[in-house]
Length: 106
Image 1 (cartoon, rainbow, N blue to C red):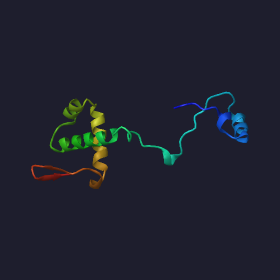
Image 2 (tube, one colour; image 1 turned 90 degrees about the vertical axis):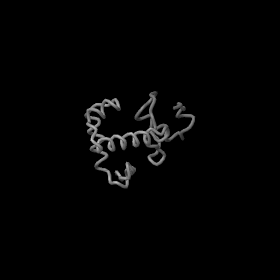
Image 3 (cartoon, rainbow, N blue to C red; image 1 turned 180 degrees about the vertical axis):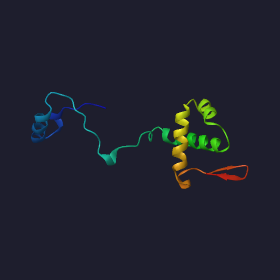
Image 4 (cartoon, rainbow, N blue to C red; image 1 turned 30 degrees about the horizontal axis):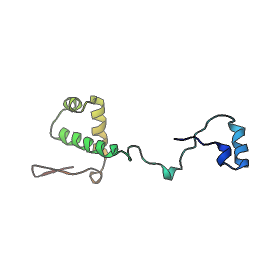
């Protein structure tokens, strides 16, 4: 993030209005909502977490305990429980389907 001088980029009347609220201080002007990116969208973290969470659900449905899943994924049991709760609340169309031994798991 770079800083720009307000008196170099803003019209005088807007600068005067801003100076009534903040004078000589730095302020942050957020992007418009339609220009914002979702967290992790640039790095692909969202997709990696989605795949991990689907694997956790699949393994849980096969009988793996939350304690074992927590150790396997370096998470707390509470985190595993939260992931399972969130994944089971999603409609099947929002989750990837898995075929395991000819059985479809959603």
